[in-house]
Length: 391
Image 1 (cartoon, rainbow, N blue to C red):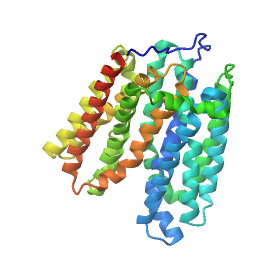
Image 2 (image 1 turned 30 degrees about the horizontal axis):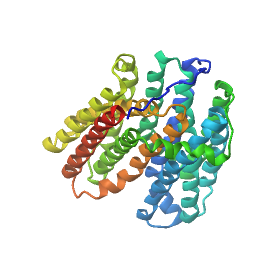
Image 3 (image 1 turned 90 degrees about the horizontal axis):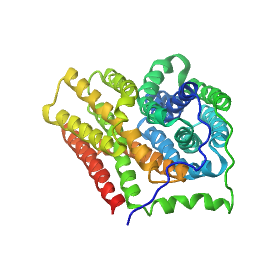
Image 4 (image 1 turned 180 degrees about the horizontal axis):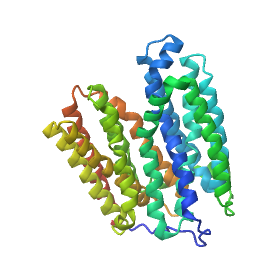
């Protein structure tokens, strides 16, 4: 059966000026997603402060990831009901408050609970922001804009770890959380200033009705397959770099930083890349990512070769993420918030599972082969999803 989908509201909201919106949203995206990664360089200082073993504190990473992924499902659909600007206006001040409370944690037990809560409230921003861009950016700017912001979410894995590692010796781990809280507060003010007021929305029915779009969307086999493909993106991304760290790869910080040019290049090329439809673009990116990971496993390259292959892989991740985003929204009709909640849930669910996957492999070579297979499976899921749409 053929699914008929409306991809735009009958009366599109007024378009926005893209530059200030993208600057604010991208910086906020880096700060939001970076909370998952920035704690990694701080674990040693936190363990010394609380006089506990560092190994047990790795759950501080997972705790945030659990809250973050769950928050997408909890809050994403509410932006369809209450508006993007309103939800972001609630979420960022709460993120500032809870992040500041993490800085005051007297021990790991309190910190674990606060990290779950931090992930939950920080997750209000991504689906509302991406839905806002999908609605408000002119079609000629839309793909580029979404690509820039999603690249910010990916770049956070590198930028926030570098920042945390560089500054922890100066301000301490508590000072870094306080600094993050201040930046969330600044983002709350900035988004309030640059976002247009929400359009009038249909709030008929009860509050639980806002969540009915999620099970409705999950009845679409094509959308489910694309969400499963999305899980593999950050799953492989986080697992690859975690595996490099576990295996004591030299120059790891430089290898992480080496991926940044790819994250900058893909949005710049998007005006040309966007001429290719989202699904073929996602298939090509998955294939490129799988190939680069397989070559790392097969050739065991030196530092320079590894850096080049990782840069290609990161470019594939930067390309496939907005492509999957657009392809999922295209199946969702008016339920953009719910669809983007599912997309971001799948994306960061994979990111949360990445460290555990990396730890399951004894050496780097089988890990890279396994991650290449995961990327290939993502491509297969997207390919099969096109048959489900046409069926």
